[in-house]
Structures are given as C-alpha cells and as structure tokens.
Length: 416
Ligand SMILES: Cc1ncc(COP(=O)(O)O)c(C=O)c1O
Image (cartoon, rainbow, N blue to C red):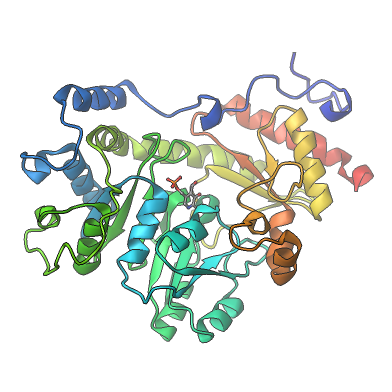
C-alpha cells in the first residue's frame, strides 16, 4: 500500500514508500507507441523490401519518405536516416573532412557516446568544463579553442538546450564548425529554431529512450549539400546511390571515401515516420509533466532544479536536481528510490553512470585524475540527481514524485 503524505518515516528507514508501482521508464516497458506506428512497421515488413536502396523511386521508399518529412519538420535542406545516434554524430564529424586526429571539443557533461563518436570519426576528444547548470563553460571553451581544437560538439544534454547563440558566436570567432549532439533533445526549440539545426550538422537518435523510438536508429540533419553527400557515402550510399538524394548532386567520387554501412532500414524508417506525425503530442505531454513537477519543486532549500538557458528550452524528459554536495546527492537518490521513484545520482560510486566523465576509462584510465582535471564539472555532476519523466506519467505519478522529494528533503538536514 502506498503511504499517505503524513507518513514521515522514510522507506529507506523501513517506512511505507510513497509509491509501490514501478516508475515508468523505457527499460521496464514504458513506450509511447500507438497502433498506427505498429501498423506502419507491419506495412514495411509486408512489403518484403527492407533495404533502403532498391528499384523504387527514392521518395517511394520508407526511408526516403521519412527523410523528406524530417526536412519539412525541422526546416532543413537535408536529412539522412542512419543506424544510431552515435553513427549519426560520427558521420557529421567525418563529413567535416578535418585532418585525421584533430582535437574535437566535447563537454564533460554528456553520455559516453559523444566522445566515442569523436573517436569513431578518427579524432581526439578534448573535454571542456561545465558550470553548475551543466552547461559548457565559455572561458574553458576559449582556452581550448586557442590551443588548437578544430571543431566543437555541443550537446543538449538531458534535453536542455545549450546556449547556441553564444556558442556559435565563439566558434565563428575561431573559424571552427559546430556539430550538435541533439540526441537527448529531439523536438526542442531555442529562440524558435529547432535544436540540431544551429550547427553545421545535427545528430539525433531514435533509440528507445528518445522522443522517436525505433529500438535503434538515428538521423543527421544539415543544410550543407557537400557535407550531406559525404555523410551519405560514408553511411553506405555506394554505386551512385548518393545521387538519388539530390535533384542536383554535388561532385563527389563515391569511392574516394570508405563505406561504413551505417544506413537506416525500411522497417525502422516506417516506424519513425509514423511516430514523427505524433511527436507534437508527445512533446506536449513531456512539457506538461515537467512543468507540473518543476513548478511544485521550484523553491525548496537545498534542492535546485536545473535551469534552462531560455524559457521553454528543454524537452522535459528528465528532471535534474542539484543537491548541496556529492554524498548528499547519493543519499538523496537512494532514499528517493526507496520511495518508488526511478532516480540516479550521476556521481554515485555504487551505481556507475556513463554520464559521469571520470568513468570514461577508454579516454582516461584514472578516474581520480580525470576528476582533478575538471573540478567544476566534477562538483556539478556529482551533486546532481537525474529523474526520467516519461511522456506517459499521470497526474498522480507527478504528485507522488513531488511528495517523495518533499518527504526525503524534510529528512535532509539530519543526514548531511
Ligand atoms: C548525448 C547522447 N549522445 C549520443 C547518444 C547515442 O545514441 P545511440 O544510442 O542512438 O547511439 C546518446 C544515447 O543516449 C546520448 O545520450
């Protein structure tokens, strides 16, 4: 039985939890998928044509139609369906045609896939500090660019827009391109412009945790026809298939680049296309849930709700709360989990999180040295807890989240 709000004994101390049903999340079966999405995937299955390139006209293929719709939705010149968000990002970076082994900037606060994509593209990830709001620190960005970095990957992490006007102005000052990792922020706008369309290219994922869910998948957006053509060839548009994507194809020897086979298939494209039609409804649901919870938790002492760079510049698929220090954040997450809320502290040593940069041993083998090299990011990341907010949350789910936070927060002074 769920506790009433007057039951103040924490579940972590043996009290009754605020909720006993599972917190909805993609990995326990929560999905925003309708019958028409499933019908679209079945239609593609029944066609028995699963590879995107065949004798049909380009626009008659599921993938071609999905890409055309992406261009309309985002207002971009070109879209390329691909195998994942990581490969979309790697394609964007490869297509920049930087010298092999270039330094490419990556924020400390991101998913391990971002530096992985930089490595996949043959470059060297160079981390840049983040501030308390987990946004790129402009001073450290300037320092890294002055030291010779050739490109910036900006990440809209956990659905919160990065400050694109400021960051693109800095990039322009140094003459380096920006590629957006917009994977966590599909459908979010900043100053009326969709994230993923601010830089030279924008990468998105359609993995199950994202606002379009095809299990695995992704896409790359750009207005740059040459970049698109290069990305197409790398993705595996061989034997002149690249040209099918253009009315006026750019000159490019399609055997001058390697082929990595990072294409999207027809079944995923059909599923994603159907979901894209319903994306506005999903975005509204995220926004409604997020605003309800964030407003209710706006003025708690010791708990800071992550602030967006501009009003409304967030997806609402994740609620990030900053606690006074790292041990308190770990305890807070543990206590909240006991109350029935799906929550993780990014810095919990007992719950290793791939969003904590010091855990990326493929980049830096010594976590302590990584933390010492980026003290501001370490402090901000380690004090933050992360609560996924499904589009399917009910009013009751949201109220229970607020109750649980308040219940655990009331116990904080004695635990610190
Ligand atoms: C910021 C970020 N970039 C890239 C990715 C990788 O996307 P995918 O899993 O589709 O490769 C993720 C995955 O969650 C992510 O959060």
